[in-house]
Length: 271
Image (cartoon, rainbow, N blue to C red):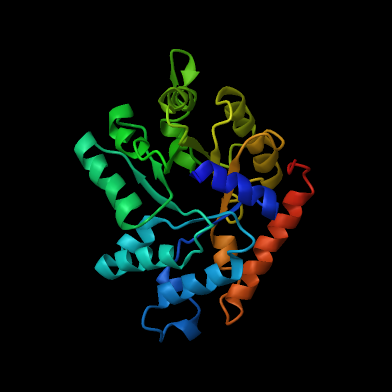
């Protein structure tokens, strides 16, 4: 099955929209794991074991692994291998470069790492992203409206009376010939999530910013899915994986995902 079909199936089966972000900081790993041969990988495996049956995706952020050099890159690959085959993996790499470079980035993410989806930046235009789009069985989430404070520096600037993020959304619809594109829309803009859903049809959304960043879960879920009519993945990282810094960290991570799922069930979005 393609990425969208896999996600749709898991959302229906698990009554969840939660994507667990594996942004693992070695400095935040519980003390009892520090003597392991690879503390980051051991931490990730235990988080995955505790949550893989109650979430719908994982999103490791490549930066946390690239910062560790060659060992970190191998850790990322082995983390992805540890995730059950039925749960899709979004490699949060925010790639986007001239065509030949993007071709290699796409090969790295989809073939070497084995990711199912990737985040990409549209700043260089369509030809910089086409190599990702050409993997028809894979998926790409295009940055449109992010949750960081400086998103306003460019994304909210108007061109011809319209904000840039709207223009990005419209172009992604045009590029979506293989039905394998979606948008990144930050949870810190709840009013604009609704607006983006109205102008982007049923493009899947990846919504970061809920949890430690303070985004609104209910608005993200209802507006992002158009009350259950479309796909939206709500990414939660720190509030899940660092729910505890003790020996019970994996158990607490599971409890946090379960809590989020219970909240989601109250919003009447699972049709």
